[in-house]
Length: 457
Image (cartoon, rainbow, N blue to C red; front, side):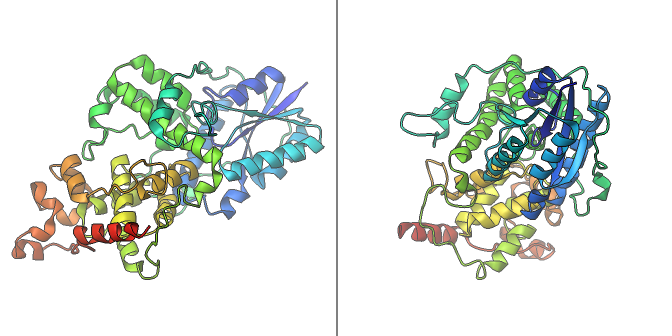
């Protein structure tokens, strides 16, 4: 009997899974393996919300495999060591894994190739598992990656992609491969109370329901804060419970401007992956040096604490930050708004905001989180690095009746209409009854500080 190992990483699904498909074709038996990676824990990336969601994903994956005659083998420890041990135990000839783009994923791949090679075990790395189009598939003349989204999207849209793969009917797992108990969401302390259920089953159900009612109006409504017409699929994409390639195919089959707008957002995710694949240091360093003199973190400590706690005095900013804490998720328009407020109005280093997001976001990953923060901060791929999002303008445009604000800032629920966005303008008697702070900074002063600092470059 021939045996292969499939190492699951950020691809916790059975539908459209090239590594699993290839392993089932190459071997009589397959070991579906997930390693609770000690390196991820040491790096501080296993925040409670993602641990809880991961537990759901692994439980669902194990259940789906058992329905097909298999099971998920879970191990705990350094990933290279555990993969090598499992391969040796079951006599595997091959290990299959999805390609990753982060520096950590690349080091993991190098370690697997080197140590498995010593045992005569082949490492098979598969593209278009975590992304719809593999990084490096399309490149501009004279460069190894696109630094601007629009030309990338044009080329990305022309790529002839493979068809999504069906989930396997049967998975035979060899006897005697030792595993450890699956993690349980109930054992995770500190998760957000409004965190959604994880797993491929939940993700596919969410997409099916949203595509029936929300996809057609996505183009016109996806920025509406109160309506919250976004798909909320980002956590499932982050953990690979859904295939981005399959989502693109299904959206295009649906058709219409809403579907194409959704596909464009999937492309943004691929765009960031191809940037980080080429420039892995951009996860911690400025992609484009702007010579920012960010405020000293100690001097800005009170402002940073107010931003994190949703007490800046700007209701739409505070609503977004409270949504993040309660749900482990934040509306995309709100993410842009609060990031602009921190980096350009308060003039605080983007890395401080990115770290806070990674502490709480269930979909927080190095690729999209870090590069989106850089885009807003003006150190990344934005072609207009000096743009500043005014929170009042944004609030009146995307939450005109104040519904989103009142949903998340209960202190202001008695304030009607658009007045809720500027509580400092209320009459003294009405304002005195509100337990809500004054604005941290005048917007004009914040803008002047930003322009002055950038003007020195």
